[in-house]
Image (cartoon, rainbow, N blue to C red; front, side, top):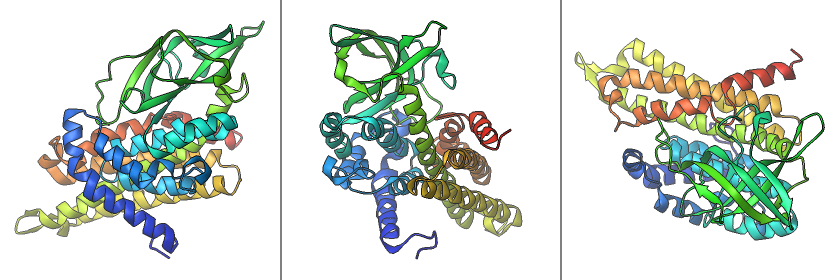
Length: 383
C-alpha cells in the first residue's frame, strides 16, 4: 500500500503517469503556455498510452479502468501543466462520457473507439453568453424538420472545440416550450466539421494558455434526428449528472495543481539561499510549505472519498461539490503562497508557479463556481 493509500497496481499506474508528466509534458509546457499553442505531440503520446480511454470498457476501445483511475492521471498531469490536464479531463468526462452514459449502442460503437484512442476529441456545449449557472437562460434552439434537427444559437467557453482533432461537440438546445413558457432542453450530437457550425476565434485567457477554448455559433446547422443523445427533454438533467462526475475530476486537477506548487516550493526553498543559508531553514517559509502540503493532502482526501462513493453507487453529489470547493481553494491558496515563496522569480511568467497562479483561478469558476458548490452543499444539508 502506497503513502496515498493506493494498492500496488494503482500506485504503479500513478508513477507511470508521473514519469510521463515530468519527462514529456513538463519540458514543453512553458513553450506552449508562452505561445498559446495546443500541444498536439503531447496529446498524441497520451493517446498512445491509453489515457483517453481510461474509464471506458475495452469493448469500446477503452482501457477497462474506472473514473478514479482517470482522476489519478489528471492529478499527475496537473502537477506540471494544468492545460494538458484539462485537455484530458474535458475529452473524457465532458466529451466522451455523455455518449457512454446516455448514448444508443450505435452511438457508442461509432464514437467511443475514436474518442478513447485520442485520435478524436469531443467537446461539451452547455454554457452560453447568457446561460452559465442558470441553464434556464438557454437560447440555442433545435427543431425537427424533415428528419433533421435544425440548430441555431451559440455556446461560450467550450474546451477542445476548435482543435484539428475535434470531431464531436454535444450541444444542449431548447427542443420544446410548454404553455407556461418552460423550456425543455435536449442534448444533440454534432459531428464536425458540418455546414452551419462555426468555431469562432479562440479566447485570450488569463491562464490555461495551451488549452483549446472557443465560442461556437450555429446557423441552420442540420444533423440527423437520430443524433439526439438520450431521451428528448432530458438533456439538461443528464448533463447535470455529467457535471457531478466532472467535479470530481476537476477536484483531482486542482489537487494536482496544489501539489505541484508544493513540489516547486520545496525545491526552491532547498536551493535558494539568503543570509548564508537556504530559505527553507526559516520557520516562516517552512510553516508556509507545511500548510500548503496540508491543503493538498486534505483536498486529495475529499476527491478520493467522492470518487469512492460514485463507484460504489452511493449518492455523491454533496461530496463532489465539497471536493470541488475544497480542492479549488487549495489550488488557488497554494499558488499564491508558492509565488510568495519564490519572490521576484515567482512573478516571472516563465516560472512554473506563475503559470499555476494564472491557471488556478479558473478552477474556482469552471464546471460550477465556488458559490454554486456552496449552494449545492447547503441544499443537500436541507438549508
